[in-house]
Image 1 (cartoon, chains in turn brown, green):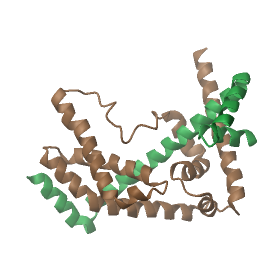
Image 2 (spheres, chains in turn brown, cyan; image 1 turned 90 degrees about the horizontal axis):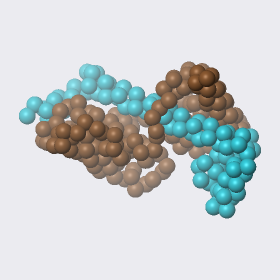
Image 3 (cartoon, chains in turn orange, cyan; image 1 turned 135 degrees about the vertical axis):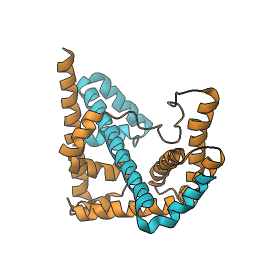
Image 4 (cartoon, chains in turn purple, orange; image 1 turned 135 degrees about the horizontal axis):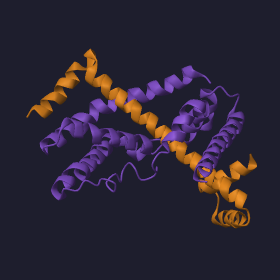
Length: 180
Length: 85
């Protein structure tokens, strides 16, 4: 794996996040502060809004990119009201249904398996993540991971799915043993 | 590998409704395929979780950078003033 190329991707994202932090966080902080909220609350909702923006903007959606500030600010505000303001009024502690903007798609993490894959299957996870999560085009993927072309990158992608699927299968077997 | 590609097309909804139905019929008759499809679905879920976890950590790292490094002092002061009131 070409670590240097991947580092470039990380650096690019870092620059994006710094820019958006400087651009939008002050407005979110002002809103939260005005409503009586704290710095930590502003940080919490801003970071989730930023994550949501990142996930939404990946698939080359021009609409959201041209109004990034409005999207992040609006999402953060929505999350703050849901998590902290409504929570106070109704003294509800349950925040499971509040994360509409961010947590709709991905279910709870299987931490053990994920931790295992983060070390044992790192290369495959990075490859799959670049394609399915960051939604980079196959040409970019081939270049990043040092494949000769789209075709061999595609083959490798399927091999990685198979490899991770094997881990999922092994995990299922372990659980069965445990239950017996 | 063909199997994985077909399953992917089905799971990520990249097939037309007719082929999707056909695939579901195949699954009904083939328990092994059923299991493999469900495992492959878990792979995509894991990849999403993995990606999200990394990006969250990257965002937190940026936060630490902005709120600890000397070159971002003015940004920090700006935010501090907001919460002083």
